[in-house]
Amino acid sequence: MMKITTGLMLALGMLTTMHVHGQDITENKFGKGLVNVVAKDSSYSANFAIRMQSLFTSNWDISEDDGFKTGETNFLVRRARLKFQGFAYTPKLTYKVELGLSNRDLSGASVYTGNTNRLILDAVVKWNFYENFELWAGQTKLPGNRERIISSASLETVDRSLVNSRFNIDRDMGVQLHHETNLGGSFLMREAVSIAQGEGRNVTAGNIGGLQYTGRLEFLPFGDFDDYSGADFAREATPKLAIGFSYDYNDNAVRTRSNSGAYMLTDTGFFETDVTTSFVDAMFKYRGFSAMAEYAHRSADNAFATNADGSLTGDAVNIGKGFNIQAGYLFKNNLQLLGRYTTIDLDDKVTQLVEDQYTVGLSKYIVKHKLKVQTDINYTDLNRGFNDNLNYRLQFELHL
Image (cartoon, rainbow, N blue to C red):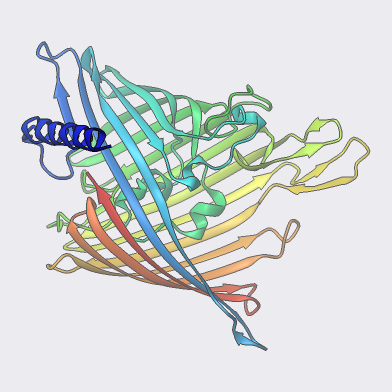
């Protein structure tokens, strides 16, 4: 026994010594990735980064008769991700791979995803093949609403709004074409079109319905700025504005939220209906003040899933509209105060759900969005007076 213990101690000592003497001192700075590699012949580059969000939530239901009901609290890893990006062969051919490791990122396994966890968030290559034209191929975010396209790591709120959760078109497999046009002076216009499978990320069972077609147009009348990130860290000396319009048509969609939500099954297979989703959004920044607004609308040719005999299955496309507006001010100590108002009005044909949510948030940025603490309190008024909810959240973000 003594010999075994002594051997283990010696082995541990050797490993410790090897670890100490094997440490590398890197010139990488915090928030720029753990590993940054460029080939000696400049034939490729690779950047590896990790990020995590730890979230605490507390909820209380409120009713007119009973007042506050017993609340529930949760601690969870909201996001835990690995990110890889760089170029291959030429700087004009870039790539991005992002993997989600948290339960919420992995959830949603089904026969349509090969009964496996949905590990892959992004796996896309981008080829700048001519001037300002860039072709994307693979799985990534579709050019939908601004709030969804903004990375969850770069939000000035704890999380996205109810408008996004109800109407966004998220990620999908397909191809996209992006272009930027200078309309004169500092006036910029960005265009993007996409053709995707139409059933969301990590689907392996093949295309069930038709394809999904998306177009987006953006105008930046006062020049380029960081319009896909929350908070005005640059403290823009002149007003900056970006206005975006997106239109999405999902041909023969088979899910309740266009390319997400539940599959609509019938006694003969899948219920298919054409679904359209449109967005109008804007981002404004000036001297530490930032504001963002979004409007979303979704409709369907036939919202109710039916069997062959015309009877209802119980599934329906979530159609309706929503509006979100938020504004915040970043103080010089990198503390930001923010307010948000969101309203959801789903079509009465499907449900009578109406949600009004009021949010007050506070963020402390230690290293901009790479290291921050955010908190907010949300009051949600359901159906204008019934089953209201009060929610408190506290979140820590680390992005190496």
